[in-house]
Amino acid sequence: MSSFSRRDFVRHTASATALLAGCGGSGTGDDTGAVPTTGHPDCLALLDGGTYVGDVPFVGEGPADEVMMDAGLDGRLVTDLSKLEFGDLCVDNERFFVRTAASTLLPDEAGWEVLFTGLVGAESAMGIQELRGRSGDMGKILLECSGNGAGRSFGLMSVASWSGVALTDLLAELDVLPTATAVLVRGFDTYSDSSDHSSVGASWVLTLAQLAETGAFLATEMNGEPLPLHHGKPVRLVIPNWYGCAHIKWVQEITLVDDSAPATDHMLEFASRTHQSGLPALASDFRAASQDLAAMPIRVEQWTDADGETAYRVLGILWGGQATTDKLQIRFGPGNGWQNVEVCPGHEQNLYWTVWEHLWHPDEGGEVLIECRIKDGDVSTNRLDTGFYRRSVAIDAP
Ligand SMILES: Nc1nc2c(c(=O)[nH]1)N[C@H]1C(S)=C(S)[C@@H](COP(=O)(O)O)O[C@H]1N2
Ligand SMILES: [Mo]
Image (cartoon, rainbow, N blue to C red; front, side, top):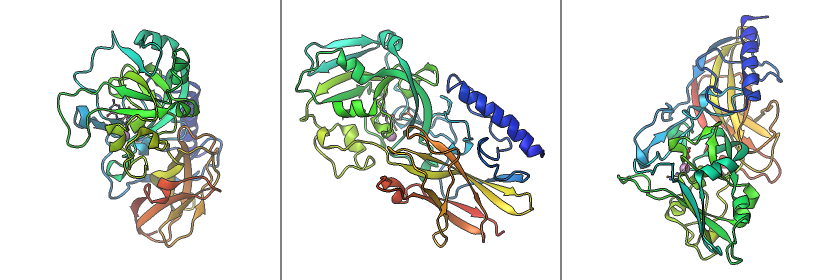
């Protein structure tokens, strides 16, 4: 047994424990900077007996340093996706990306209530304690900011395990008028400073049908802890498989509306990024802000394999969409052919990422564009197909 495979065994054992423990509390993320694993325990160890040389950075991308930059409306924290390992499905709360930090004017959570108003027989409010008491496990769900991109190393994307209450369950207890077709979800949005980059006020309109289809819920816990300040403390909306912009934080009011409700400023701000056609005036003319299936590399490791040859281990993720696939392909440079990626142990769900790996033996050095594609019947991969998730590395000649 080589020293690498022995270390792998230790790491795999640790990962398996983390998986069993779910994504609760802190410390589910592996220590980083350690010698990487050589594969999922259920899969072939691609580089068994090899020597890890180092990671090859992606070129032309902005930082993903996991520290809060700026504050309030401009507050951003970018997750470093290159730290992901097999078995690490959740990102710790401290490392989970932030798009818009909490306002300094945010009220204390003690008297927090969510008001249900609009097209209901009688207005009603639910206090945070009652919401917490009714919260149940909602599983692991990925959030991606629709404004994610290379400028932030694609790190406006993370997975957490959530607890909350389904909105359809809460609405079922209200006297919702038959004219109501949708809900307008509004979060606390008073800031002391303005922003040059983001408009103030986040609210989103979803139809009652979309609530039921997606299982949208009011979340009160993230990775086994009460919702952290910058992630919507004490309550936020989570809509499985929709872009993050619709996941309203610091929720205070849910208004039952009909099809005449106008699109909110926040919806208009994110219209192009959620792939709307133009700027629809009515919320009911917005298409679902759902995410298509997509994939990208997240880490390229240089190794010397057991035969002394240079080899690269490419780690990546597959996420979004409505259907699972076994048709992921990768290409290293436009002049080369597409290769099948064996996603191991398989792509089994669409609610959070699946980590994959691929072994690469380049013929020549230089800057190489890495692209993924999924050609699987009528599975929609619009954003992936525009080249949105392409990344490049510069490698030495073999
Ligand atoms: N109240 C409020 N909710 C909000 C926002 C906001 O600016 N204000 N930003 C949205 C956007 S654009 C994204 S991508 C997600 C990010 O959630 P996170 O910061 O917890 O990762 O929150 C959404 N919810
Ligand atoms: Mo976003």
